[in-house]
Image (cartoon, rainbow, N blue to C red):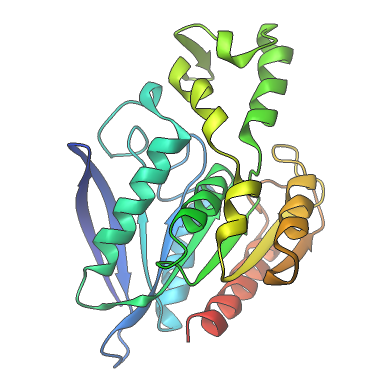
Length: 259
C-alpha cells in the first residue's frame, strides 16, 4: 500500500489530503473520495476515514480523503464555510483524483459522513457522469431544517436568514453565509439526478441526524438505493462492531459497483 500527502487548490486556497493506493497489479484502480462531516476532518472520529481507506486499499480500491477548506489543515477559516463551497471542493477533488495516472476515471465513488453525506448527494446529482456509486453514512438530507431547529432552540432565532454576521458554535464561529446558502442545497432533491446505486447506512437512534433522513433518501431513490439500518444511538458508528459492519457492508457495495 502507498500512502501519500497531496495538495490541490480551489479558488486560490490549498486543500490538503491523503491518497491511498493499493499494491495490486491493476494498471488503473477504482477510486473512492471520502467527504467528512461538519467540523470534521480527513481522519474523523475513531480514525474511521484512515482505517476505511486502508481497508479499501487491501481490497484493491484507491481513495482520497481530504480536509474541506476551513477545516483540518486546509486553507481558509471555518467561518467562511458553506455547503456550496464544500460541493465545489468535492468537484475539485474529483478533478484532481481522476487526473492521477493510477486512477480509473470511469470507476469513481463518493462516501460521505453526516454533512459530508449531504455534499456527496449534491455533488453526485450535479455530476452524474463522473460518479458511479455513492455511500451515505448518517447523511443529512435537509440541512436547513436541522439548522433552523437548532437556531430556534439555542438562540431564539425564528428565521435563519436573520442570523447575525457570525454566531458561535462550540469552539468555532459560523458565518451568516452558511445559513443563507442553505436555501440553495437539498440532498433529497439533488440526488434524484444521480443515476447510479446508493448505499445508505444510518443508526435508528442517531441523536444528530434523525433516521428519518435515511428513510427519505430511500424514498426518493427507490430501487437505486439500499438502506442498511443500524441499531443504537450512534451518529459516527462509534462502536467496534458497528465500524466493522460499516466497513464490510460499504466495501462489498463498492467492490460490486466499481467493477
